[in-house]
Amino acid sequence: MKTVAADGTERISAEQRKDIPESVFVASTGRIVKEHHGELSTLIRNRFLFCLNPNCGVAYTRRQRSERGKLATLGVDNRSTATTILAVRALLELQGDTKLPPKARKLLSFTDNRQDASLQAGHFNDFAQVALLRSALFKAAEARGARWTSPWTPAPG
Image: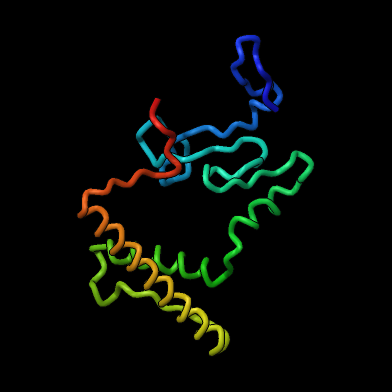
């Protein structure tokens, strides 16, 4: 809850300050590190009350207790998406491993039936096509002089 000071400035009440997300830097090990020694991330120490993307507009009440339920709605994709993302990450790591011979830098996946295999293959191909399209659009915009800024980065000043 916001309070308004005598001079008209809005402030967050003392009891809710603990709910304010904070910017931190996180190393690949998952540990919080000094500024600019890792990836800029957002740490939520208490309750997840709102989406961190300013364009999202999702907010939760304090009465909604289940943090799992809140976060589950943010990732409404499914196992196919999770499997694809894990596969892409594994392939990127394999391709970067110069100790392995090129023909050994592969990923083998197993499934229990053809329908699941077909679904996963289709999902992976769709994912790759979308990634290529987004990459091409980004490169084209960049070539025309457009500059990209992350919606997650606070505005200067």
